[in-house]
Length: 265
Image 1 (cartoon, one colour):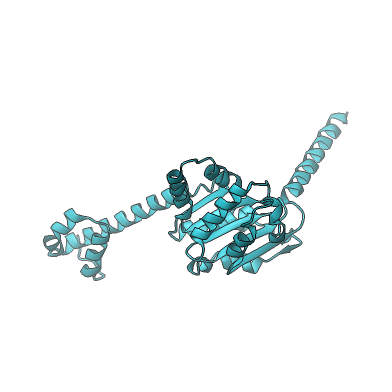
Image 2 (spheres, rainbow, N blue to C red; image 1 turned 45 degrees about the vertical axis):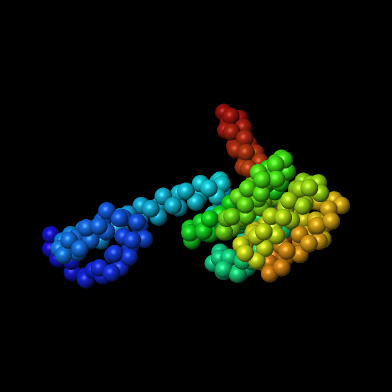
């Protein structure tokens, strides 16, 4: 093997091997670095190892995030909503809000792409190396409220408080008890000013009293979510209703075409 045309920084190689905890390799470091061909091979091995670990780490974080299937932001029809802050959404994809431990709230009626935007935001965070968890409000609060033991509840709260980014989807689609409200307040308080939370909701914050009727903590809950939060409002008619109408129109045209073909002599 010819000596590499580009000089290899042996100090950086050793730092990589140390970070990867390749102790067997490090034990024979001196003899490996004494030979140019061996040094080149070590550089290649380390590159392979880093790439493979990065791939597996990404797969694990995507799996643990529970994102499921979602459309990429490139498929978002920006012309359909009557109001959508495209610049704000695209700026959020830089993840600067996470560096500030700020929250994001997508507000809008059903079928306007709130969940799609939240999932794309979560996926960008995964790609950037962050831990992410996506859940619906119904699943989250049902999970927490079902726990009777204080110790079990504390562990579960730690589970939801741990990710760098927590996405809570569909707040406002169901009504919840005071206990549910208290549990959500506890979770939001644990993450407050430490880690970012993304919420999608079909109700303005002024209407959250309908989601958590008679809950004393609603004002404080909203206050913590809103403090230093980016609120993105999407207004218009449902994408899903639009797509259903388009499918119906396409099927009608197809049937009409078949009927016309059959009627020809």
